[in-house]
Image (cartoon, rainbow, N blue to C red; front, side, top):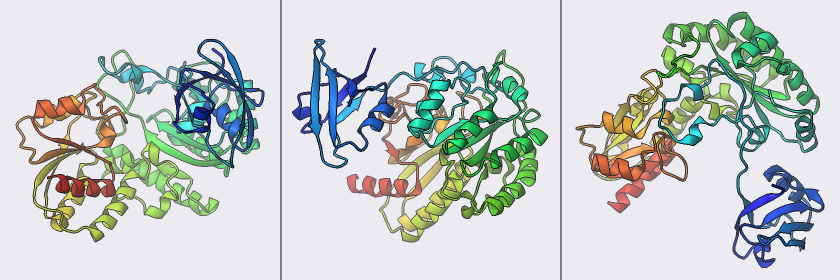
Length: 435
């Protein structure tokens, strides 16, 4: 269906004054068809005079002339478009390893360059058409987040489970020629795309700096639900130690050569190896933070800042749930914060029963995991839950357990907090005020 479906019209906005309603469709801006939010943003970014073509719910077509101040919003919010689906069959695909009974949306694999630009989603570019490439360069859709995995074309086809795909290095070179900034990743599969293959990939991507701004290497994630899937070797503690010894020096050498951090090893390598993290300067402006790179060092830095300023909060006991991998540094922060705040803060590592014990991150802990872990445990005044465990805006865990249901089944107050030291400390002060 043509145009963009208008979901919300802000009261008192330009669109509201022009009697645009939710349910109408925006067809064109200054004669240009509007296919999605990117087109809308592109067409309305700088023009002060706009001609909007609106299709009303009764089928009428309205042409509305708009004069606005510099940057003044129109007041339109649009229904999110359905993402393009991924047709790859990656050996390490996490979606293929999900158990039954989760939210339907979790089983959808997207492969949409628009979401890469808008939301930072990683894409493989295997479905990138010539027209899409032209649009990226013309509308300057930058930065993009690209899953490379390897620059060896034949190995990449094997890893992605799809033949006849465009050579990724050629695609990256075309984007680089158009000065599109890219952040890249390699999901590391021991015995497949490590060793000499990884050396080749790193060299190929570093040669495209500065348009390729960063490369993160993250270990593959394996759940307990890999029935009828290819056998893959996990990254264990010994492998992680060898990998860090091999690649951290190269990361530092590239930083010196390129004069900024480029090659990043995911936090999970250091957690598995039980080795110290690089210094905070090795992460630059944290371009790969959403990819699990630098989250722990940044947490520790912020925790130290919070502890320096923390004062007495009050007197009560509360339990704080966390994933297994984050338990050591979270518990260390809570122990030091106890002394400053006067509170009793009990950290509780929740083992992942939904995906299996090998999955240890906080963001994949389910509601039923928490219920099973805390059976018979006295939580104190409240159970404190980091917001990374629930879906934003809905308060649902991966297994569709709601915060309300969790509160009912555990028989205690549940308090959600921003998953940062500052967010946690702010929540504690608010909790004391409400006590």
